[in-house]
Image 1: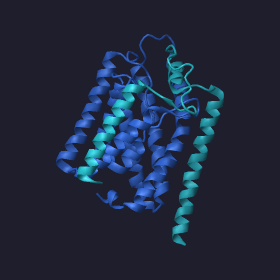
Image 2: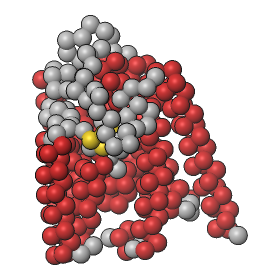
Image 3: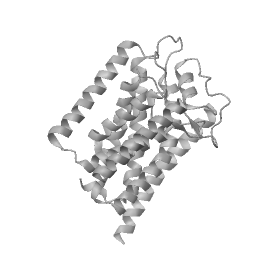
Image 4: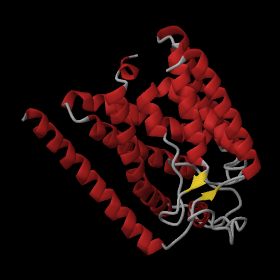
Length: 91
Length: 211
């Protein structure tokens, strides 16, 4: 019973915060329009926008930033190191 | 999650050095803490390595929400490892990101301060909410949202203080707040992810939180 009350308190606080920020974000998004984060920064500070990613829509809209080959190489290295550390020390 | 997406050269060299020095001082304190106060055990190194890989991988993906945004799991890092180890993880992620061309090298110091703010505030809020006996999911979720809010505030302050070189347009709090407001929409998604992961780990491996 007490646990249910605690969880209800959590739902109310978390739910209220979520609703406030979702409403705020959607409102600001509707007035500023559909822009990538880099474009938002450029517009906010008055720098010329970057055009390097134009025309590339990624996979289902998920776009990989930076140099793709470097990303794959570094990610492979980082994962290999993680696996080695895991084998040696466990979690 | 908040990250200064500006190219090298946007900040003057004085400010780049200033933010780097501040970030290095904070990192030095983290290392001192780990060496003298809280000894790091081997299993925490494994956890830190896993979080570094996950954060680096997810940070490079632009998520098609609100026109394209990023997540970097700073709150999850903070809650699982604490600010000292978290600071080192976000330094590595920022350096690796700059190495692949996502973010400028000169911006690492400033971005490290933003990430450190998120790590520290998320961790502190999560710990502070422990007194209220909330469910782990909600503690982590609320900690994430507040941590990322403070990260956005740090980001705005750094840009306002530094100024931008070579632009005639005045930089206003209003314009930067628009970026932060959109970022906070993504913070909600990150809050759900962090809440779920932390509550799952708490259920299956509660010993991780007792270290």
